[in-house]
Length: 270
Ligand SMILES: [Zn+2]
View 1 (cartoon, rainbow, N blue to C red):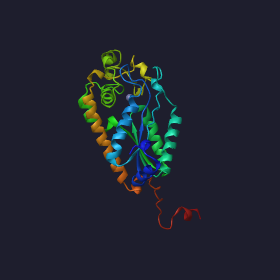
View 2: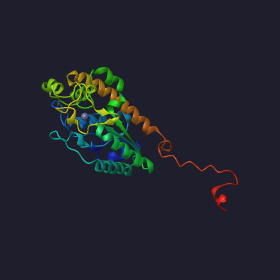
View 3: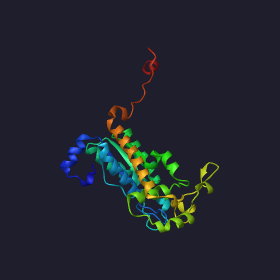
View 4: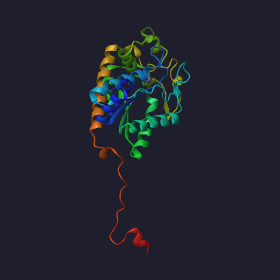
């Protein structure tokens, strides 16, 4: 069920039957000259809304702006500071817990959010509030992604282009050639690390137009295959999570001190 479309009595019925919520999280940031700024949140929302009903779990409204300082040089990119983002997601998650949810999947479509979502999951886990995990769609189907495209690119490449083509009529097809030629079609050809250290901060250091990979390899048909496969993974994950007994998800207690008989710490002190 999509929470935003429900009345409160309807939400009450649904929340009595599931312990799990999907929270779609994206970004509003440049995706080259051929994709909209909404790319990541269109993908996250599409997947979460498609998976919720088959999995029998709740889908919340989408968090549309994430942590994107590394794209700030391009027009229209919006970003929030990482600590603010973490606090916001944690607060939203605690609100869900108050409504009867104790397990959450952050359905994420933006690499810049990953470490922060995992940090929030850690906070909620450590005090036993909820079991919240980060899920990145393309990492659930690496073999399919790898088999469909020659030059993937981590950002605005053919996989994201195909997904947007399938989900929304927002791909600028007449810009695909330019996206490849003025971007960074082959990420193996650029130097991003030196002696084990990452030596860039912003996308613009490695791509003139913000794109990576070869988006001319994209199609709506490939997008449909990616979408169906990733949705299937998300449904399976949500079903698994919802079925787990809480005891297996909550934090484990501290190990006990091993005491030798007659020589416990208190005995030694005396
Ligand atoms: Zn993206």
